[in-house]
Image 1 (cartoon, one colour):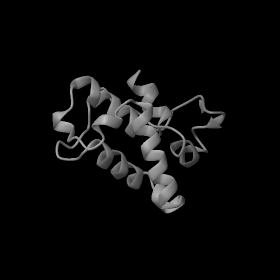
Image 2 (cartoon, one colour; image 1 turned 180 degrees about the horizontal axis):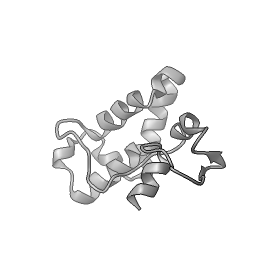
Image 3 (cartoon, helix red, strand yellow; image 1 turned 120 degrees about the horizontal axis):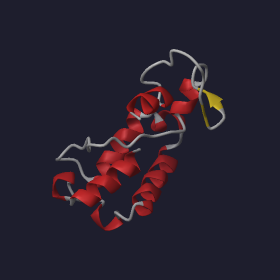
Image 4 (cartoon, one colour; image 1 turned 90 degrees about the vertical axis):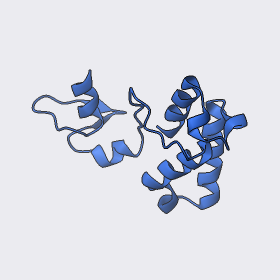
Amino acid sequence: KTTTISMLTGMIAPTEGYATVGGKDIRTDMPSIRQEIGICLQHDCLFPLLTVREHIRFFARVKGMYAKLPRQEVEEQIDRSIQDVALHEKRDTYSKNLSGGMKRKLSVAIA
């Protein structure tokens, strides 16, 4: 599983054969694929002193969303992500104060 996920996300190159993600070849279209996928790791990679909203905003910057879209549109997507994982009441809560299940939800929203 680990090797397959690593290949599908571009962390390692395939040694033979081919695979596609969303109809795109991982050998030739990885930059495009990375714009469309996210990965939720087994262990949470959260910063204890960032809030739910700050985490999603930080990773939106890492993914380059602010460079590609108007700020208002990115902020609306962040709000939708928070709603989608039912963390709207915790959006200003530090991750260190979230339950284990809520941390997983935040990881999904980040992905």
